Image 1: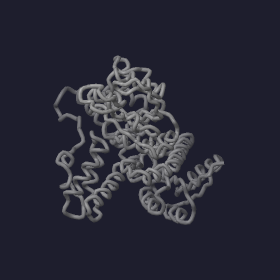
Image 2: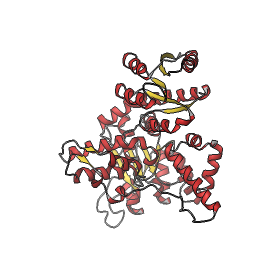
Image 3: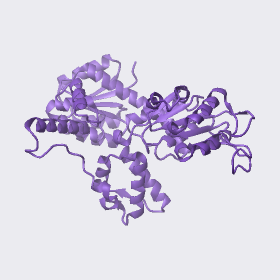
Image 4: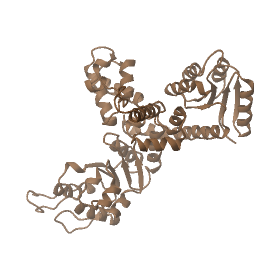
Length: 454
């Protein structure tokens, strides 16, 4: 029924029997071990997809099991089964690569959902592997490095939409890699052998933008001493990427809409209808729905562009991707600068993991490039990082004792505890609520009350 092998490691026979019996009824292939060492041996000799490991055992604890399992097969998903008093250790295990944790006594419905999430994640990774391989072969996209569930979902949507005719709207903050993803979609599509043409909308004035997009005839305006093809003509048969599409003036929005509807346009100053076959991928860091309400962006154009929407999360919301990206960028810039392979110190990596990256992936790449260029030794250290990075400290909201009245100090303490719990849980509200002893509903109320962004 379900082609997944699950290993249950627990020194308590009763707990082990409950879990193995239940999972067998669900159709999984089950292995069981009564100690961490026995579980490790099973992992070496049997195909294992998922491990449920008790945290506290006589020989090896859950973290020690995790460390050895990752050396044997990093693709195995490990879940820590923990008593309430060791939740902090379970969170530490997640930082080291555990998929999740579940508290004793195990809620079997919760276990069901967790295993379904693991399988969904594995299926996504498997489906995305072809995409990543093709991206690396066709186009060296260093920014498409993902360990996080959020980016796996982004890549999966990109893979499925790539070979369709649908227009795509990519949203996200500056520096998240919107153009990189657009190029990936193009190079995976049947249009890969035609042009990928990028237009940086904010960099052009209204007059220049119209000419750049649609071309112009000789004499169309002062300085137009010869006919010029526009980006749409150049991209015929391929893809045009409109970066920051929300900045397109309304007069040009009308003409762009006509291209989308009729697949034809006229050059500036011309009357000849020019037919084009172009796939549009647009990107923006703005709220286009808000711009529609303000009357500065056409609603009909929005729906033409937004056939498939892909939102790239900021780097601070997918910290699992930071270390793989650092390694990737180190390799890239060592080769470019003809340097031997460099390592990164634990202290430098720790600071880079905690930093919030207002400039996202682009900022991280610049930081690593700078470090590779400047370092004089074989290891990148704190001294190779920019001053604002190595001096970075997480914001603390707790006032000193005596500042404000009792209510204000209690609220400040509560706010700080919520902030810390969200950081501890990687932004997961359910886990943060567990750490705080709050229901998810109560936590949402307090997030809104204190205006805590996560």
